[in-house]
Length: 278
Image (cartoon, helix red, strand yellow):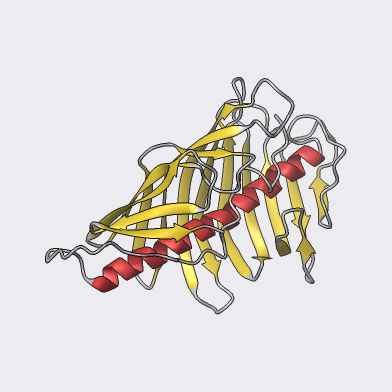
């Protein structure tokens, strides 16, 4: 299994702001304006919080690779975090791994500033089919956003490239201003290109699944309508569509047809909102 770095397949979206223009569509049966606004707002939270937890996945896989828990150890040291593994005996499983970023801020290779700890258990090397990695958080904060929940990565099989299931249960994101959002995800990542080389630059992935984000009793549900396609050389999803549902309103989020750009189109009640990704 090749190393996966934060600069690649995972989005850096958590400063996402909606910069949108809506089409003029007088629809007397359209949902209330506040429902549309909430759909736009929760869509932004959903995409930005996905990026925060995607970064967790990258860190976990990188630490595994650096310490020989994925396949063979690499010669790349994890920047600034202190990693402890118990038991140290290579033949003994399961293992408990603690990634301690400290309390003052540890800046990673993608510029994310992390504090606190990620603690996870692993039943066998992650390259092996059936390997399960289960992570929890101890006062873990990324760029001021506190993450909580149980994050699980399961290897579905690696014979034809990386194929993993990623689940977040009881997720919780606390924003710097104190606003709290709860979150769940259940996605599958299947490598679609780059399996035959040792280079990271040709790796591509198709992502499917669903998730929710909630606040103050309101919930947005997102489900992949088509594969969400990601490439190492682009920081954003390059293609694919999500189906969205909020209260009595349905919509879609379209990432385009394959161009690496910063544009996604949110369609709600026959109106389009152009969202500019960072």
